[in-house]
Structures are given as structure tokens and as C-alpha cells.
Image (cartoon, rainbow, N blue to C red; front, side, top):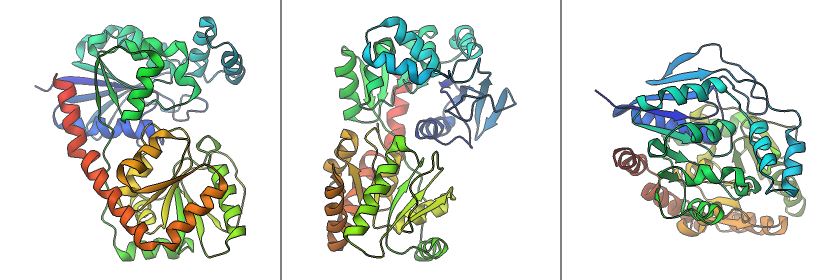
Amino acid sequence: MKDKILFVIQRYGADVHGGAEWHCRQIAEKLTDRYKVEVATTKAQDYTTWRNHYKKDIEELNNVLIRRFQNDRERAKDHSHTEALLRSNVNDLSLNVKWIIDQGPVSSELIEFLKKNHHDYKKVIIFQYLYTISYFAMKVVPAEKIIFVPLAHDEPQVRYPVFRESFRKPEMIVFNSEIEKNLATKTHFIKEKKSVVAGVGIDTMNVNARDITDFKEKYGVDNYLIFLGRIDPAKRVDILINDFILYKKNYPSDLKLVLVGRKVKEMTKDKDVVETGYVSEKEKYSAIAGCTALVNPSPYESLSLIVLEAFFMKRPIIVNAFCEVLKYHCLKSDGGLWYETHLEFDEVVNYLLENPDISEQMGKNGYKYVKEHYAWDVVMEKWYKVLEN
């Protein structure tokens, strides 16, 4: 009989879009070959409100049993005010606790379930440090049961004292990168403990010349940079658009910027910025394969799935120099370039356009890098060892 393991995460489902949620789902589904896998999550679909959306308490998706629990409330209306107060009084413990509760999602049903049933599972895998569910799950599950996947990046919240226990209590932590591991160790003064850098793998699709041509014809693009993910100021997509518009004023050409994903907020409109909305997996990989380069302008990443996807499709990357993880990928792979200012953005784009042979070699270097470190067989071998030790 297979051992049972339980994942704990704030949202989960085929129609839930987010890097952490996608990461969790991929690992959970890959582990069903050796374990009976369950997920404890909330009924929220939208992370901005935590509004209860799903009706069923129990569902099954790709051999994973999903247990959904009611949220006690939606996201606190004064959350941003609490955060502003906390930024200037970061060691105020009462403010720390108010902030994490206001952050959400809050589900007393889910925490009660963990309290009563954690002994039924070989391990409880708690995903993402940032949310209320993870914070309280840490308090009710014994340390020896916990595998913690923090998905931390260098943002103000990771330094809040309220998260110290989350990083110190678990006997095992799975990190996405050495950069994340170093950040957690330095920020929360973690003593020597068991940890592994595993990351996540990518399932790519075979894309041929016709697929790429079909994508280009559908959206009226030929020569283009691409961004994939939430079209969100939090990801600095608004700044990317402005940088690109400035670039086109300085260097007129047929180059376009293609944005693939859900738009969270209205952005600056421009004839050279093409928004596709959601696309199929096939179209997504066709879009990546046909691009000049993939751009990730975010300063906050613990891994960056879109960078791994670009490398798997042998395309170079352009990234925000202020994100240590993204810069690390570039340095380790020799597969991309980074920028700090819009003038450096101009130079990087021009360099790739003017040196197509070097650009192609960067894409090949990136492919070699992800095959060595982020192929699924490499990632899952690390997970099997974590779960069996």
C-alpha cells in the first residue's frame, strides 16, 4: 500500500494560475506514481480577495485528491494600511501577527483538519511562506512531519519576524535555488539543518516551424520579445512596457513586445505591444520558440518558470539585474543578459538583434543548463530522497 502525503497550499486547481500553485501541482502530480497524494487547500480561486469560489469539498485531479476548505473571510480591507504600519515598526510582534492574519487566506476548517489528521500522512509538504495558511499549518504539524517549500525571494516581507518560526521549525526545507537558500539562512539565522535545492521541471511540447508560423500569423508578429505570466505591475510589466516604448522611439523597427497571460490591471496601450490573453500550452511554446528573447522584468523571483521554459525552447533571456536569482541563471548558464536602466535595456536588446549567432548560442547554453539542473528526472530524484530519508 502506498504511503499518504499531504500538500498544503492557499489555492489549487487546473484553473488556478500562479507560479507557486503551478509548481505545487506539478510536484504533487509527479509523486502519484509512488505515493497516495492529497492536497489541503481553500475554496478560493482569486488571491486578491480569497473569496470562496469552489463548491465541492472534495475533488480529484490527475490522481491527486483535493480537500477544499471554506475561508473564514475575504482579504482584510485595511491590509495595505497594516503593511504600511509594519514597514515602519517591523519588530512590533502584534503588528506582525495582525499582518499575517490580514494577509490571508484564513481557514479555521483547514487548520483544524491538519491538527486532527496530520498523523495519517507520512509527510506534510507546506508550500510558500507568505500566506496565513502556511503560517498556522506550521504551528499544528510536528516538525519531523514537515517538508517546507518557502518559495522565498528578496522582498521586504521575507524579513518580517513573524516568519522566523516558519523557516526554523521544519526539519527539511526544499529550496528553488542556492540564492534562495542563502537568503533564508542569512535572514532568519537558520542553523545547520537538512535542505536540498530541487527547483521544478518543465514539460515542454514539440514545436515545429508551422506551429511558430501559425502563432506569428494569428497575432500579426514576426520579430518580437515575449513576456509570459500575470500582466501585473507587481511583476514590473508596466515598466517593461514603458522601457520598450522608449526603445522603439530610439530605434524604430518592426520589433514587437508580446504579452501572454492574464491582465491584472490596465497598462499603457501601444501599437507595438501585443496582448494575447490566455493561450493553449501548444501556442505558448510556439510563442516562446519564435521569439527573439524572453524578458522577465520582475525583481522578485525564487526560480522563474518562464526563464526555464525559454531555455528549454533554446531561447535567450533578458532579465532584471536587481533579481539575484534571475542574474544567477544568466551567469550559470551563459544563456542571457541583464539590465538595470532603460538605457541598458536598449543596449541588451540591440546586442541580441545585432548578433544573431551569439543569441542562438545563448539559447543552446540555456538548454544545456536546464537539462542538467531542471529536467524532471533530476528534480524528482531529489524529491524521492527527501521523502524517504
